[in-house]
Image (tube, rainbow, N blue to C red):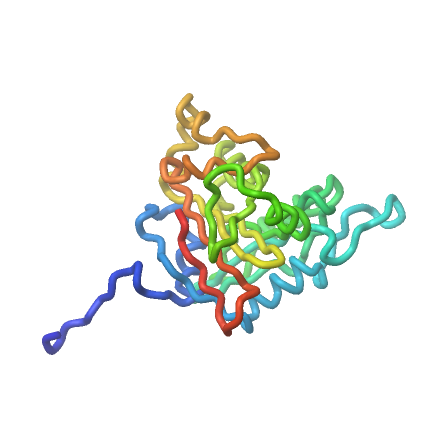
Length: 260
């Protein structure tokens, strides 16, 4: 390498920091799919992962429960799904919202907590985030369904990481694309934390363009059975990027790999 030049490695061989990932995620709706990194390192001792694992997966930080007090029994802890809002600052540091919303054993939000999340979202839009912070999506847990799915042989060619297949649901996919189809483009990332994995489903500039057309082709690419898996075969045409990593493995860092 000659003096005064900088060596730039190929992106597929470079592991990027989680802060670099945050810089990309918070503006993913304005980026082409080709820009996205191939490998990202997420430290297990980071504030983000601790908050997601303890607060969203285990439900220790749940502040809004699945029903009004006394209305019906509430499932607590890891048996219930939970959801939080994702934000990032100018440095790319990703955080979850102070409010963590509880669902039940099969979905991330109940009718009650969904209403409370809408009210919280409205307050965020009114009051605003601190200077430099930007909201870009949600992260939720899959405590039971994913564990059961891993014991069932795969029916198709679902993506895998470390020999374990991903078990995103059709509902997760719909929660990403439906707001975009309806003209709301502030939330372009859906995250999931399970007993073994953490992953991100990300809409890009191409996603917004394809879904914005609302034509027959856009509808066909987006079609999915709610109880089935997302239409992974259509992700490239939709411009959706998918990452996952197994957090139960030994080591100080989780390596998130781009699968699509």
